[in-house]
Amino acid sequence: MNVASFFSGAYEKLAFYLGFPFVRYALIAGVLIALCSSLLGVTLVLKRFSFIGDGLSHVAFGAMAIAAVLKMTNNMPLILAVTILCAVLLLRTGQRAKIKGDAAVAMISVGALAIGYLLMNVFPTSGNVSGDVCTTLFGSTSILTLKLSDVIVCGVLSVVVVTVFVVFYNRIFSVTFDEDFARATGTRASLYNLLIAVTVAVVIVLAMNLVGSLLISALVIFPALSAMRVYKSFRAVTVCSAVVSVSCALVGILVSIFAGTPVGSTIVAVDIAVFGAFWLVGLLKKG
Amino acid sequence: MAYLTCRDLALGYDGRELISGIDFEVDPGDYLVVVGENGSGKSTLMKTILGLLPPVRGAIARGDGLLKNEIGYLPQQTTIQKDFPASVREIVLSGTQNRGGFRPFYSREDKKTADENIEKMGISHLAKRCYRELSGGQQQRVLLARALCATRKLLLLDEPVAGLDPMVTAEMYALIESLNRDDGVTIIMISHDIAAAIKYADHILHIGERVFFGTKAEYLASENYMRIAKAGDIE
Ligand SMILES: Nc1ncnc2c1ncn2[C@@H]1O[C@H](COP(=O)(O)OP(=O)(O)OP(=O)(O)O)[C@@H](O)[C@H]1O
Ligand SMILES: [Mg+2]
Image (cartoon, rainbow over all chains, first blue to last red; front, side, top):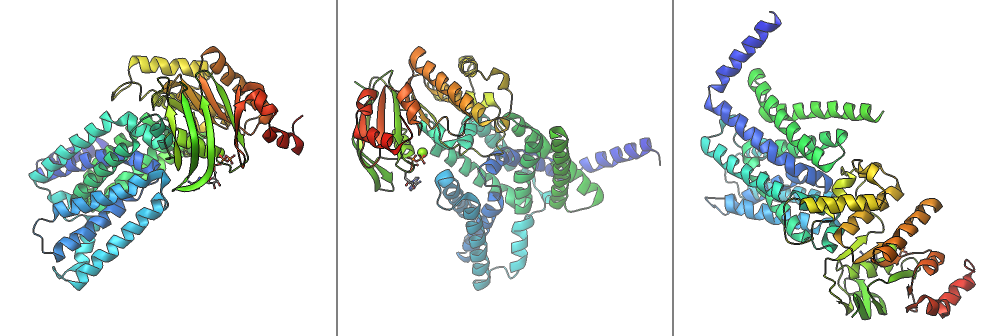
C-alpha cells in the first residue's frame, strides 16, 4: 500500500466516522474540556495544586455517596456544593496555609474517597460498589456515548470559563505570581482565589461525569508542564498549553476511534508523548 | 499631616504580641531606614503597614492623600517560585493593575508607565527575558520597577541589597537615593547595613528591646547606636 492510498483511505474512514453524531459530540466535548482544563491548569500547577483535579473528583465521589445514602434523586446540587466548598477551602488558604497545598489536597482526597467508599459499603444502594468507584475514575458515560444535551452543557460551561479567564487574566497572573504584592497594592486577592476555586470545582464536577477524573487530572497537569519546558513567559505558556491540550485531545480521540483503544487513556498517552517531546526541545534550547 | 502615623503600635501574629511601643511617622519625601536584629520584627512591621497583617494593638493612620493601595513594596525573600514562567515586562506591567478602576486589559498608558520604569531601572535590555533566569540584582530591579508602577508616593523596601555584591549594592543604593531625591519618592527601607543607613537616611527607626525613632543626628547620639558602635563593627 503506498502512502497516498493510505492517506486517502484514512480520510475516507475519518469522513465515515464523522458521519456519526456521537463521534462529533465526543470531539467537541473533548476539545472544550481540554481547553478549559488547560487554561486553569497553568495556574493550578504554579500554585502547587496539580493534583486538585484528582482530589476534588474524590470529594465529588464522597458527596455522591452521601446523596445515594440520603436517597436524593437529583444529586448534582449536593455534589457541586460540596466540591465547591472544598475547592474554596483548599485554594483560599493559599500561601499562608498551615498545611501546604499538596498535603491538604492529599488529605481531602484520600479522606473523601475513604468516607465515600465506606458509606457505599455500609449502606449499599447499587450493589456494584467497585463499579461505582471505577466510574468516578474513568467517567460514568464514556465520552463516546454523550448526548446532545451533554455537549450543550459543555459548550455553555466552556464559554463561561474562557470568558472568566480572559477577563481576569491579568489579575490571575498577579495573584498567582505574588499574592502578597497583589494584596498590598489593592488587588482583592481572596476574591480572585475564590473565583479560581469555584471555576475549578465546576469544571471538575461536570467534566468528571463526562470523561472521568483520571483524564481531568491529566488534562490539568500535562499541557501546562509541557508548555513550561519550552516557553518562559506566562502568556506564551498559557497559549501553548491550550494549543497542546486541544491538539492532544483531538489526536487522542481520533486514534482511539481508529485503533479501538479506550479514549481517556489514549488522550493521556498522547499528552505524555508530547510532554516527552517538549522536554527534549527544552533541553536542546538550553544546551 | 504625615503619610503614615503609628501610635503605640504593637505587632505580632495571631494576636500574640511580638513587639510593642512603636511610635513613628513618615512625611512625604522622607527616607526612613528601619534597623534591628534578626527576628526583631522588621518584616512584620512592613507587613502590618501594607495591611497584610492586622496590628495587635494601636493603629497606623494614613494621611496627606495617601491611599491604601498607593504603597509599593519590595519583599524580603521572594516567595516567588523558582520555575514560574514570567517575562520581566509581564511582571512590571502587573504593577499598574490597580491604578484606577477595574480594567480587564492594560491600557496604552499602563504600558508606557511600565516601559518608563523598566528604563529607569536600567533593565530595558532584559524586558523580554524570563525573570527566573536573571541574577539576584537584576531581579531586585525588576521588582523595584513593578513597585514604581504601583505608586510614585511611598515605597517599602525589605532588605533590598541582601545577597548582592558590593558593586551592585552601591548601584542599588544610588538608584534608591535618586528615586528619593530626584523623583520625590518617599522611602522606608529595612536594612542591616547601619553604615549605609547613616549615609542615606534622614530618619531611623531602631526596633528591638528598646525602640528608637528619630532623625539621623538624634540616632547617632542615642544609646541604641552607642551599643552597636561599642559592639565594634562601626566607627
Ligand atoms: N507567619 C508567622 N507566624 C508567626 N510568627 C512569625 C511569622 N513570621 C515571622 N514570625 C516571627 O516573628 C518574629 C519577627 O520576624 P520578622 O520576619 O519580622 O523579623 P525581621 O526583623 O524581619 O528579621 P530578619 O532581619 O531576619 O529579616 C520572628 O521571631 C519570627 O519567628
Ligand atoms: Mg525580615
